[in-house]
Amino acid sequence: MNFRILSQRIHWLSFLVITGDTEETLRLLKAAIDHGAKIVCITSGGSVKDIAQQNKIDLIRIPVGIPARAAIGYSLVMILQVFSLCKLISSNYKKDILSAIELIDKEENNIRRDAKETANVLTGKFPIIYSTAGMESVAIRFRQQLNENAKMLCSHNVFPELDHNELQGWKQCNNDVAVIIFRNETDHLRTSKYISISSEIVSQFDVYLRSIF
Image (tube, rainbow, N blue to C red; front, side):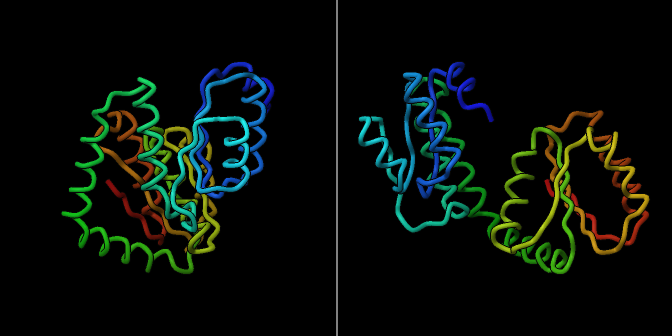
């Protein structure tokens, strides 16, 4: 990443780093300070906290000792709140957060059951994660969780791009892979057709395939 060019183009930045010591975040933070950008830092401590305090930058502290992969509840809400205070989004996000909490509470047993079933299937396999572009952030987060928590290598790709290249790789498929496809009811009709056709192709092999909406 070219931090010098990026800092020249961006005039407002929100920095989120749980530990406060991620190298690339610190480099970008220093470049943003030199550029005179409006900055808000969200961290539990570390160098980001020290730099923010030294430069009198707005600082939001989250609890110490929580692994980054387990702190999404704090980090996501704090970012949305900052965006709302800066008039980048409306305060209606709070209703969406509450609705999400209610849905998770309601579906907790089903979520736990499905998660356990999926985990059992993925054990000993190489997970291949597919999604639409709109769901790629979910695919990336799932991949990262598998990397960090399960210490597993895995890959992800996006429809319809993967149909132009990765699908060819299935000609040499083996049984040591498992496929998870993240879907959404808002998927484009054409993309949904790509997913259906690709699923039919993958289903020809003796591998686990599951679509998660």
